[in-house]
Length: 634
Image (cartoon, rainbow, N blue to C red; front, top):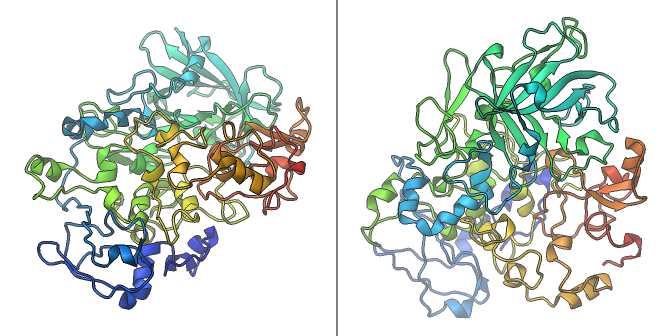
């Protein structure tokens, strides 16, 4: 009864939304076949009986009665199917997730850890480190798993004046350039990237006076610009645990002195300054055009161009990003300026004060982001198992609801409010974040105006694999792990959301060891025999070959383009960007969660220039060592 119709990006995104009928495997199956399914109802003590179970295999799923506001559907027995013989005459104790009541309030992770101190390793996860004060992290941020998190700050030279900092040059605005990389940028005097017209000098420096980090912009086109040089204080850095890092700055008094925080520039540790394609290098433009005002003739690059502040809600993290990055997210509008601002839950160990009160707030993903507001849970704590937990436990949800908890943010949907206020945020018409535990159907109908990544833009032309970041959920729904007749696998089967595993991305096993429990818990496979069967070769053998090399290729790319060289048709150095595109395949940064093995014959690979081809195993990890034309594959 599980509908295994393949899911494509178009089936999710485009009318008539064909994937709606099968993108929630259990709930959709029940909707289609409810009258045919053996079932029973609980009494007031929760006891139930199911009679006349026919032969076959069945998932055990708990539907919630109308009016039950305390529980969420699914149950901990809904993940694996059981043979009828395992069910007839046997008792099953099913644990359900509770849910916070409507009046519950956020209390902050510091209070949660008072009772759940065993989850303190969560402080080491990328979820908790995403936004951080440069050089001054919050008490609940532990960077021990990411020793290179702040490596880019080495470019911020301590100085009395901005002129003592690291200087970069930016110019050659191109409105047709893909995404948010409209300018070329280079370290000063690095002429490997040609810039015909330099607009501004950019300085990275740490003030010897106040200890703050600044990005200063000096207008090279217009020496009379009253805003030049503009000294933009870095309030927070975004990223560093997972690849790129962006710099989020406040507007100085000389440009208007607003409360909003805006992105500017990005550092890409996987970039490579040997690349002649400018957006594959280490330092990249990121929406610098929002900080630049055209001259009076309406054209960029004229002597009367000026440094300016972005439009009030354009490119601000409060309007565009905060729903996924602030625990206890609440949006409000500043009546005087029209600016969208946010509040977070007050927490004495918060990393940043983002709102209009004097207390620190819990920016980043806290306990209550995934479990719901905790005031009622804390009120009943210690009263025993006869009291409801009033918290969401994702392990007791059906797999489609557990993955939706993560899919709220690890997807690319737009909420109401357009590309500014609704930018890839799981919010509704009232600007509210979707609570954990609700269905995918609710998410894409009430908390989205687009249902996922846009085919052909965020998805490669094969209509399956992601080409952009934070789309793991969109990939995962297309996998056989999400929908099958044996065992539904959720995010928590591979990732420990509370950290402490010692493996990257908080994985439950070592991804570099094909014999580790990460894959072998479900797939008892002889690695050498598997490779011999599939490839006609054992390659590096079981000790050196990773499952992820073939089954999780990096099809998606951070920041628009990867800087890492993949398979070379001819080796560098290259002498112009076009020659590089013809000769160097990409290695993608972000592992695909489709778990298939895309081939050289896949649409988007075959017949494409190497620099434009979708990264796959044969153009990435395998291709760096092997002549891929000689590899047999089925």
